[in-house]
Length: 212
Picture 1 (cartoon, one colour):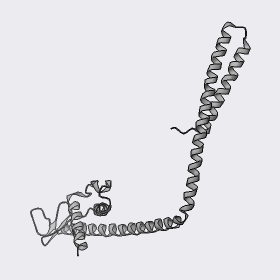
Picture 2 (tube, helix red, strand yellow):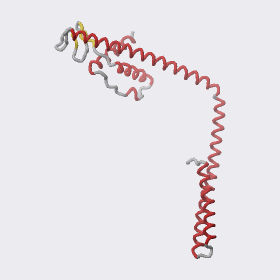
Picture 3 (cartoon, helix red, strand yellow):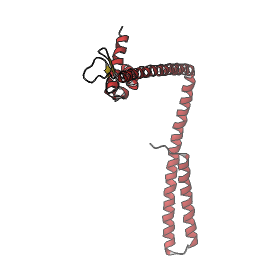
């Protein structure tokens, strides 16, 4: 059932009163006219219809108002009953906000550390390049075309910094909410294949560290 506003009710009653007044005015202007009476009766009929509609609206409005008042009273009673929970809710939210702030700080530190590592890989690769050491045919030491570095047969790829944290966050959310959209989202690697490889290396080492 659609809720009726006080404005709608007032408008309907005003239309009904206006219709009756207009019908009387028109008839008074030409009472002897043959068609005036018929038009007067039609106007009265429309005005009466508007009046009936206004009456029904008022009745429905009264019923709805009673329901609104009952809900408001129930809400006030519930608020009094839950007064003791307000402090608990406030403390709970404050604890959650503190945890999120700490997590955001930890993510910022992780981003800085990952960025520093990625920058170091690039710097080492650049140094190898200055020494004319390039790994293009399987050389054990040299810089790759994408900036990654091979040193003594060990590859040091670039790192998709944001991708590492995105995968971590999706993994943690998935433990609690397996069907969360974040878990199902696909984050494309940023920085090319080497950065994706470096991301996976860091995540693998992280899992190994956790498993100890």
